[in-house]
Length: 292
Length: 306
Image (cartoon, rainbow over all chains, first blue to last red; front, top):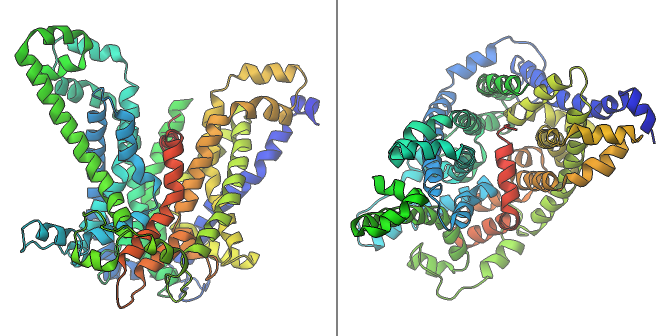
């Protein structure tokens, strides 16, 4: 055992962590650079390291399918982020009212996060299917003319993805906000109550503003989840009908692994990376700086 | 609306008790609150309920009946079919081999990534050195980056290593990709252990490993559970690496489930789809029900705070 030597020369800890650092840096930054180089190459079916500059990016931005993916990202991302955060905050506030069965309700609201998006996507596909799903149920309830074909409607299918996404992640947002609400000093609330402030007012004016740090971290986590969304679309619509529900992640997968457009896939992955980095790097920077 | 405040504030309850109308208002608000809470509970539970009931029906009942109706004569036939004879793509051996693939992939990947994470966290909290914080911050980016960026180079590397399309390849990818989060979990937990503990042990002549085994590790049970559950849930549920890096025989269960429910046959068997989805969901659902508290802690720790 190297006990005494460790006390004097702390070389051992460095040696112990070195492989992890090297591995993680190669994995993160090495592969980012490699992918970046692929995006500047002429690669199609196989990697081909002939340098073509920004050609792949030009093709990408002229691609109609990429534009559809970006538009869907806007619709899905907006609904997923703001819908999920609004619902999650509402659930957190409702649960914060000294509810007797809080533990059980929290478990129910949060269980979708323990499931794979493939599982929930498969379930939602069945529930939303136009033949025997929700449409059929409402028709049996006495509305024979009710139709609900969003899942197979190219203009509406992306909203189905958003519904399933919000359902899956609202509980997660709730957990973050609830932890934030519980962290607020009770004496602030008591003081406001003594002053005669009503409960909605206390939430709106005192509690929600003091949740600002939680708001930021939640927004950041939820946005990067939105940009990375892949599984849910694959299970629910597989990007269809046609490519009507493509998101950048499914576009990247289709180009790189089934359409033989490796360079184009790499270019779209780089755009995704840049977007996530623009959101996450300032956040990580401020997190780590304030901790010191 | 002040009734809600009185309701919120225990001290106000005696006053409310003396006045009937205030009491009614309190009850009214409680009813609305509980109505909303139960409505949301129904919203979250319905898909699970539909999955379960559909998986117990036969196709005639599904076609004639209602999505929300209880099964008339519950049967596990669809579960048996999903497990052993359903078609996933061209192969018709059910989910069983893929379930086992996931087990063989998850167990080593979870154990190795957790063990390395624990040691890393120990170094980064108790044996800091110049630059260790900066390197940790750079590593943290790995928690958030979109993995699409590593897919293409990684598939080439796995090819060179000779483990492309194998379970080993998936294990390697999951371990490396999991290191940033496991390191983060343990580091943030160990920062909270008093440094005096380590210093006292050092004065007693204990070294790096001895302190880890004898002092730090015995105090790590909560974070070990959190990390094991977090890694298990994430790796079991992973689809992206599974679909990109697996071969015909090494697909994890999520990929097989997706193939199964997208296999176009003449008759769409929703009951088999739902049974298959339940089979894929059960392991993580079980862990969540048994140890949900730890799962939630992992989720909130993922938001970096600590």
